[in-house]
Length: 241
Image (cartoon, rainbow, N blue to C red; front, side, top):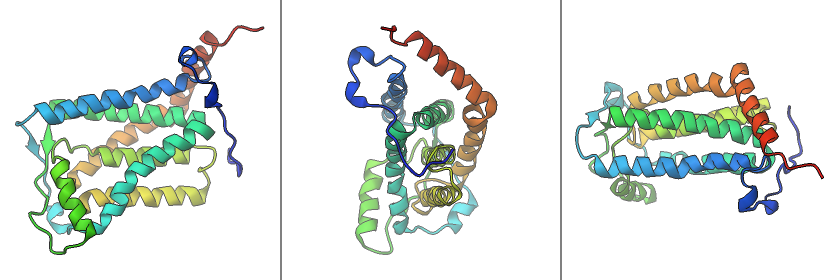
C-alpha cells in the first residue's frame, strides 16, 4: 500500500523500561543486535593479527581510485540510519523486516569472517591529487583496517535499505524504487573505487542478500514473522480494563 501522507505509528513518549517488552514497543529490542555485532566485530579486528586470506581479482587493477566516491561511501551511514528513523516512526512493519534482514545477513557475515578471515591490499600508497577527499581517505585508511572484507558489509547494508524501501508503505512507488536503486548502486561502486574492497567482495554480499530476501520478504517469511508478531502481541497485550 502506498500513501502520500506519513502517520506516526508509535508514540515513544509513552516508552518506559517496564513496558519495553509490550506489543507496542517490543520491536525496539531488535536494535540490541547492533551493540552485540559491534563487540564481536571489534574483537575480530583487535585480537586476530594473522591468517588472513588476501582477496584479489584482476578486475581490481582495471578500477581506478576515485576519491569523489567518498560521498556515496559515507552516505551509507545516513542511508542506514535514515531507514531506521523512517521505519521506527512511520512504518513499524518495515522496521521489523529491515531489522531481521540486517540481523540475518550480518550474523552470517560475522560467521564467515570467523571461519574465513579475509583482507585486501589494494589501497594506494600515495594519491595523484591532493584535495579534501584524498586527505579524508588518507586519515580514514589509518583508522579503518583492511581486514574482514568479504563479503562486504557496506554492500549488504546498502541492499538492505533498498529492500526495506521497496517493501515499505511510502517508498514502494516506482520513482522511489528507482532512486533507492541508484543510490545503492553508487554505494556499491564506491567500495571498489575507494579501494576499500575488492571486486570479489561484492558477489558474495549480493548472494547473501538474495538468499535472505525470500526469508524476510517472501510469503512464507512474511507469514512466519506475522506469527511471531501475533504471539508477542497476544502474550504482552495489556489486560482489559
